[in-house]
Image 1 (cartoon, rainbow, N blue to C red):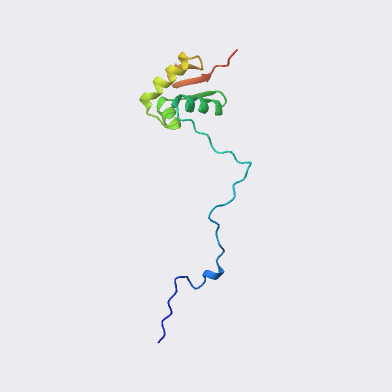
Image 2 (tube, rainbow, N blue to C red; image 1 turned 30 degrees about the horizontal axis):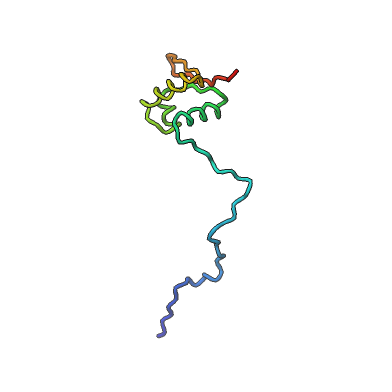
Length: 100
């Protein structure tokens, strides 16, 4: 009885080779994710047409910070004149301010 030993599967010759590195399209830009929470919030508001409405917890989830930190970020951006913040009974409205 002859035993056949091989390190390759029987149908390995039929499988296509996969290149170690695929060519990257020159038209694709890498996704830029700002590290600063204030920049992430500004990016979120900009992507949503300049105005967002929701609770602090939803803003926190969207930009990846704690809901307690959202108040500080909103306050800093508002004091800098970059956004307008309006607290309502149903949530918080954040609007980008346009530079004149």
